Amino acid sequence: MCPEPQTLSAYIDGEVSAQWAKAIETHISACSSCQKKLLSLQSIRDTLSRVESLEYRGLMKKVWNRIRKYRQKAAVSPVPIFKRSLSVPLPIAALAAVLIVLLGFSAVYYLARGDFHMLKLTTEPSGIMEMRLASPIEDLEVILKSLESHEFKKETVIQLPTNSQFFILGEPVLIRADELKGSYAR
Amino acid sequence: MMKHVLSYLFSVLALFSASAQEKSADYAVQAIMDEALKINITARILPSNSKVELNVEKSKLTIPGRPVAVLIKGENILINAILTPYESEAGKLTLVAQGQIWYSDSQAEKQIKYLSSLKSIPISLGEKIFFFPLGVQDDLKAVDSFNLVLEIEIIPYKSP
Image 1 (cartoon, helix red, strand yellow):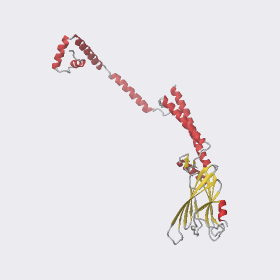
Image 2 (cartoon, rainbow over the protein chains, first blue to last red):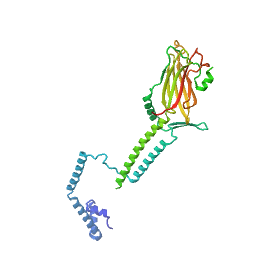
Image 3 (cartoon, helix red, strand yellow):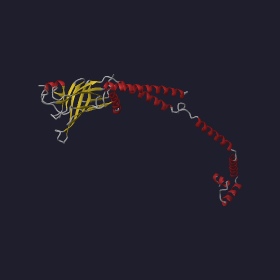
Image 4 (cartoon, chains in turn brown, cyan):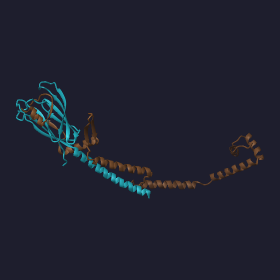
């Protein structure tokens, strides 16, 4: 029975025990097929050992020199941000473009609508009250404060006349002008 | 080639987006201006010929849903009137008036009393409303007493 190619390879490399080496030698001397295999393996081994001995240091030096030059160039003159290129896959770029266009149009549409309200309360027949807020309240506060600062004082404080005592007359009353005349003016 | 086309497309989109954002901001400001309300508040003592006189006019800007607070300070009393207009339909509002009162019955009395109330009324833009935070006497013309009243008028704010 012929030995496996791995066993022959180990035999060439001297990695089998002396007892096995002797048995393999005996077999090879009588087997022409194994002799051919052995020759082939030896040929491969010789070729590889020749390649290992090739001078590659010069090639490596060239590569390192090129890397060094590139680094030096990058350090001296970095690429301006506007000249840098960005590689984006076409489907993603197309999707982004479509989204931007849709967002732009929807923003313009919502802001240009005739019935646009910043805040609106509506009461349904069932009694449920709905509140619609069209913008973050923080933004509105900033704008309103800005508007107020131009024309009006920020604090609304009314000072009552001095040396006068005010007392509670009853429940607070909120009333229209015409109802006031009818109810209280005797 | 494709790279140049894409960069051109993105440049055009960026310009369009910047322009749209600018217009959006303009629209937002304009929308606020359109919605903005001016609340004119006049504090008076009724009847007008009473011993105590008061005639103070104040104005505040707001939008529907945003409260406006008026602080009224007296020797024995502090009133915080919070007025909130809500838009119910075009040209119609619901005014909610919350009154918070801290008062003492006499200077000698150190005890401070607190009263809170909430009233609402449907109104039209430009309509005059009277708010009596301390209540009102049956006869407003009686000169022997006085009634503190806030005359409230809500009108649309017109941008200058």
